[in-house]
Image (cartoon, rainbow, N blue to C red; front, side, top):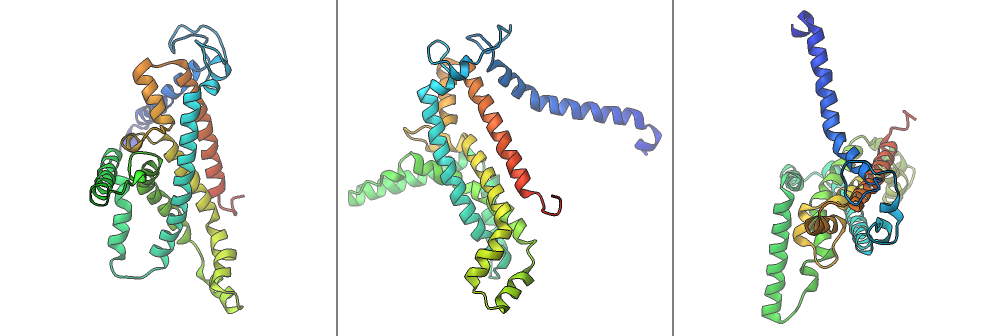
Amino acid sequence: MLLQSNPSPFLWGYRIYVAAFFIFLAAPLIAAGAFAFNDSLFPSLPWQGFTLDWFFNDTEPKLGMFHDRRLLRGMYYSFVIACFVASLSVLVGTTNAFLFVRGDFPGKNALYIVMVIPLVIPGVILGISILVLASDTANYFENSFDLELEFLRPGIFLVVLGQFSFITTITSLVITARLKKFDDSMEEAALNLGASRARVLRTITLPFLRPAMIASGIVAFLVSFENFNTTLFLVGSEAPLTITMYDRMAKVGSTPVLNAVSFFLMVGSGLLALVSIFIQRDKSVR
């Protein structure tokens, strides 16, 4: 009734709302990206001129991100952690997809709920819980058997474990959705023609799942790379980029080099997201 009686105010209000919503999302990103090119020691107005020093300069006080060893080290640790998390998440997510789509066993629905639960648990709670469990286990073995389990102390292993605990749910859901669209008659035809189950899996089923596996792996990589709240409680001396940037912000405050890192991550994340969308496109659309 509202649309029929007075459509113009409603449409204008809707357009204003949508515009305000996207401005609210985009304005901080645009500001962070713009100040990465400002020829000033502080990421603020007025604009002092265009520069690439915050990316490539090799001397203080304008030490660029590609010459800042601490930031590069943090980026390296983030990359390593994200690769491990993405690989494990895709592997386990694929097996989970077969389990929940092809499997038929008691408690299947309950197990599915358990798999999804990590997505709704705050990352802080996940980080604290994993840290407490790992530390108590390490202390028990050390006190009881004089055995030091270093991998249960804060470090890369615990960071990977903490991120994997919820990111694998994302990959499982994406790959499960793809597997549900699979036509089982293709496998049955191949089996009737004499192909082994391993060959059918390798040549028919997995190629069908490959777009979802690659796309979910990209998503897992991005989520892992930018994760902060879970990582904060599990990190050791090998601090990934998010923790390094937080520590720099807490000690020095906001600097243009952090804007340069943010711009670099925005571009990289955007490109990977586009690759993910392109991979998931249906072949019929192409």
